[in-house]
Image 1 (cartoon, each protein chain N blue to C red):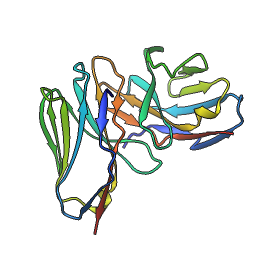
Image 2: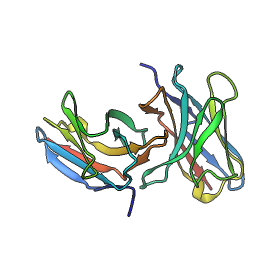
Image 3: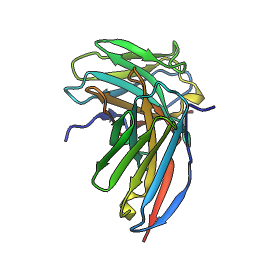
Image 4: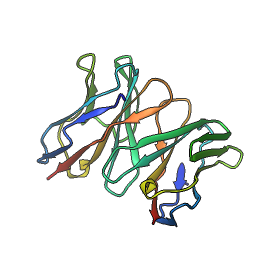
Length: 111
Length: 110
């Protein structure tokens, strides 16, 4: 069964460092997303991406964040200068139309 | 008022019970209503979705949407210990962004 895969599963980084989280969406899907979930809190939308551009973003997705689809299969989230409050689970998702399928997540710990 | 409200639980039921999980929402623009299951430190797994008002059944799971009351439900029949997880409701309007509830933690006991 096709699935969304994310790497790494866990990333530890020092405050102020740049991190890149990687995702391989389901191959025939057209829409790609990043969400995050701070421990004990709800899943929050960050950004959606369609046709090689951002289609929607939340207030959380500020200038420190960027997304890219560098080739036909990968979708990345970059955080330029990490803060302690960026520590969370980051989920990539993809959809053909309505049903969004999520990856297993990358746990980002900023120390 | 939060856009999506969900009782966090925990909800504990005996094996074989019928479970009712609910969400309320305030945004009239929501048209698609999803239920996800999430195990600890894992990604949300889509169970089912409903468009607009009505019922939808898939095996032991039934989703109901009442747009007039802004109220959605997920029923699980013949609950099993493997159903123990956190259940998330999620909704979207005309765009693709999903707005999630906080999740209800369910434990099904032997």
